[in-house]
Image (cartoon, rainbow, N blue to C red; front, top):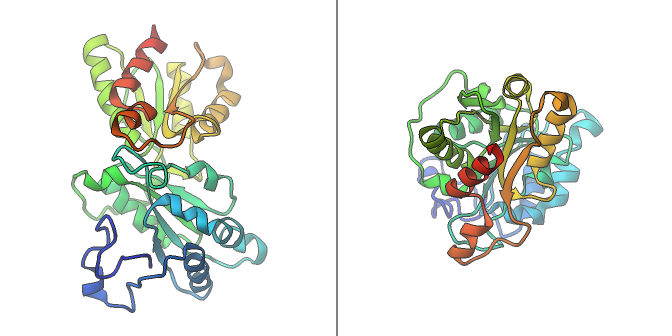
Length: 297
């Protein structure tokens, strides 16, 4: 269900040809009324269906805030009912869409007990996330970075697709532990490859993948060994999820740290439309590398 997902195939062509193959019984265009759409889907979920809603942009989900945060998220707590609902959020900046179409709003929804949240960074993890979310009996939000719709990579059925609920360790190193998710995972990988080649700095890099429920077990083990923590996220700095990750880790491992934690995030301003300003607004491979070098030195 969603706006323009049938014949048009959605703005980012993520539902291309589904209408042709499955018809109106399975692929349903909805009015420009996000709150009504989520309310209808919540009713379907309560009655034994497993609806998937695709928003045109994650920003527009704010029009359905009551339905998501108050209704879908709390039904199980209030009545014991299952609400198997999947919400797909095309999110993130870097492609010049401006302040109404580029935000990362995961912190808003992470405030609501009862919601689960996945944020994949690769085509395979996006595929696994859809399978894992569809099978879950809770409302699951999948944040899909718009820039990653253009990425390419192998995709196949993975019997271990439920592992998407746990962090994935990408690299190993001795100089620190770095935690990130979404498109920032790709930027971090390239920045760390540069730091290893030019400065011989190596890091444990973790892609969270699942933001709720949040499993920090492997990251705690890493931090106990490396003694340095950096968190990278695209959302704005103030009240961003990076601050929550730092807080949870430092509460338990404060005396293991050799330096203050580092947070790398976007600026506390609306997302600029001009490409030159948007480059400054959000982290990049270069700014991540520069921040890590300054932090290490």
